[in-house]
Image (cartoon, rainbow, N blue to C red; front, side, top):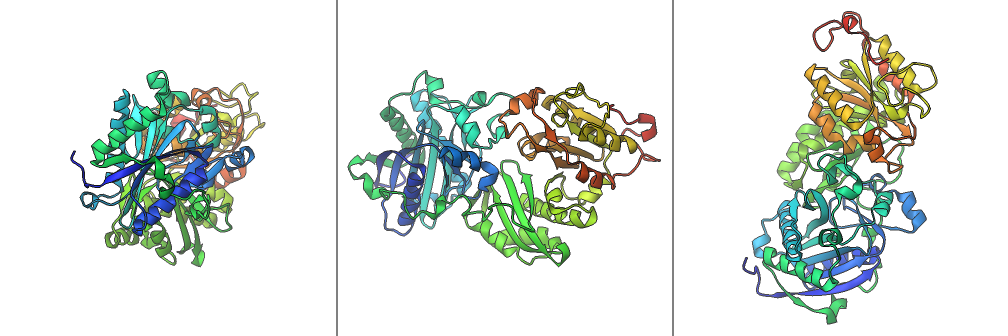
Length: 544
């Protein structure tokens, strides 16, 4: 590819610094180039231990903030979108900031990510590593993540960022991040180490840093069509010497999403390639939005569109959300990667459904926020789905560790835990109830329910599982109301693999009070048609 511009872009290496300082250099460099005051440049750098969150993420939902505070791990917010990263000296990072070339003027963030990813893939091939770009922003080797790229535009300026795993401290990574397991593996069943690749693992050693930088420079130059020149003598020209005055380092700055604010209802929805979150409080007994906050591991251009949409929703009648969001993006087009207006509509509808659940079902706000609803919205709200429920799914981890039924599909209903009460409530309504004993069992059970055309089901799982295993619920295609289990769960204890295999030993808890409120709406067995065409009395309750 021929150069897009005759000018040669200087390349510097600012070495190892704090992540906040590196972030300040990037933010300052982007602003100065956008104002026409700074020089285009490619900067290589490394960071001390830190958690890097995307521009639109809610920090407390992505990072173990208390752990980071105890360990002195910095938390900073990038000016680019996407998901959270764990950074340490074994991650080689680069930042390319330049005035947008004429050939790039039509590029949105999707095109920028694709080109940046292809450039890093070419650089890794220069090292002898066969990597490929996986949308929206990862590089993989044999299905295992080795690098990520990010991008943002500010006026006439473009910033492309990349992070390459030279080596990986898996334990610290899992301790720091609430790792989105499904992003890192097609099937999500392998251990965290098997979902990541590193330069050291691929090559048997980490080459000299100069060689790695040179390979990435060649990849960037070749794919992006830019000319590069080394300029180590003048590195101070390309950013501040110290990371001061950088508001983007505050974890809650972008989403305005800090703590559990009174009156807010929270919902999460998984698009094809992004997780979208919303918080909202309401006016007129739930009829109108008072305030909306949107967050997620999102890539969107222009970057201010998400905040503008949230502000524009203030005062909007809940029923007008689909039409309003559609017209908003017709009037203010945006390039969205891995999600779209429909996903934003659905997550907003879910906040309204939770608000309605407090009035219709007698739930308090915390109980409503602990619900996760899966469905297109055409099935109605929480109450309408519950009225169609025919099956209950219970996680084995909610049974006591001492229970002989813990790893079995069944329950003695001994009265010693909430699972027994769940079985009893289901049995009283002639429902099928199943204890899910491992991840494969969930997939098999949902497939069997889909084949029988079960109209809806009620289940329990933690919110992390719902997000990271969203594919299983989506593939089943049945509406569901899921209750968030509390207490020790495998994601907080970093034992996802044991949980998927059915060997997790800690105990989660079902909110029995909230379950009783939900089950009041689930119809009884009398005269009800079973999913396979027989009557519920013919089938029996099952499970015990």
